[in-house]
Image 1 (cartoon, one colour):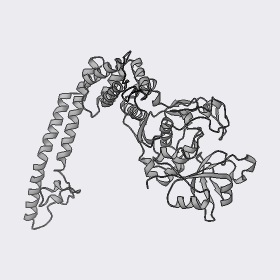
Image 2 (cartoon, rainbow, N blue to C red):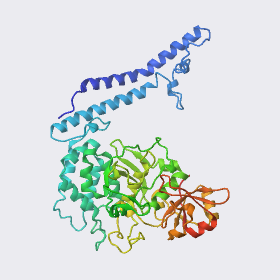
Image 3 (cartoon, rainbow, N blue to C red):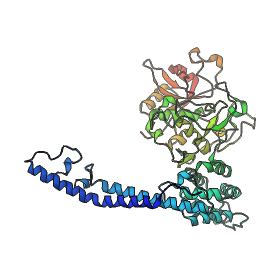
Image 4 (cartoon, helix red, strand yellow):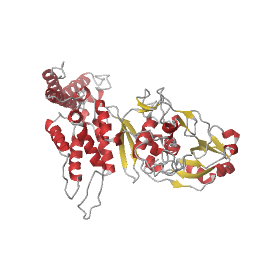
Length: 500
């Protein structure tokens, strides 16, 4: 059904009138300047106006051309009215073309039909549909399928949101899935250098998925997830799912599912508060401690690394295992328990930590299985994983920092002097605990200290103790340790390298 209720000719006429007004704004500006200048002269030098906006016009008809904040009305309206007119024209073109596609049987999300985009081109849609269908049964020859896949990747990346929406509504699910399967099977191992160039390299394909998800209407997210598993991380390999509880927190987790959170991205728009972060039910303290330590040392760096898109998806800045930066796009739904509480990391009245963690689950490439999680040798737990929350559980302290900051961490000497020097130089610092018999834990630490856990440095007391924050958050008490206690219970301190 076409989008009705809009008199497009009249709206176009409005855009034309605004452009005409913009063209005349300069002359009007000069005329007012002339009148005010003459009036002030006739008034014997007394002010001809008390308006702060009009005062600069007296004796200066070109004030709106000043480059450093000197723009004043009405001349400054010229560019603004031109921009508004151009936007109206683009939106009218977009709406007309969307209506044409709807009449031909395409489906387009209403929100996309009114976007300020170039009008959709049906040929771009039909070309992409034909090329992706042609992958079925195709003999790619000796040089592999990468050229064919790259062509489709570039075609889909170039589609506007409305074009992509129309494409996704038409493309058969099996064609999309076949494309995803072929793209993930990479191989450059032929006898000759030109042979066996198969699939699309991981980093390129990751960026491609983000481009698609950033533009796609919410009604097509499920179709993309079904075709490209790398869009949505699973959680059925996590300890919380397999055991039904978190072994460190000893809290039950039932009815885990994806759901939409009610909290905003930031409790205070654009502001990051490290003390707000809670680890949640996944065993990824080594990552959450790195994220929290970085947020404490440089909250602006973390705040600038996440943003929400018009379609509701979220972009997160993260680096891959090779040090390449990506903006990973994730859907806004998050792992929840049967009561609708977030199972993943979260903040107090905000969700940005959950999206950082979700992007990390998709990107982490260091899990090789076999890590010490009380299930050594059990293949249900100790297995190599990639692209899901299970991959982020139980790994070494130095593995997470490169994904957060883009740089390897620096190992410090295991003493408070070295750690304090690093911390006072404004570096984030994290430390780990070893295997400790619960009977040996000081009474004042019980309820917060656990074995094989990662803490972040919060500061130092006047009497020389180190203050360590627990990434559990949610009221978990800080641990204060003397130099001797630190060296007995903690190890492997890491200095994170992040811009200041």
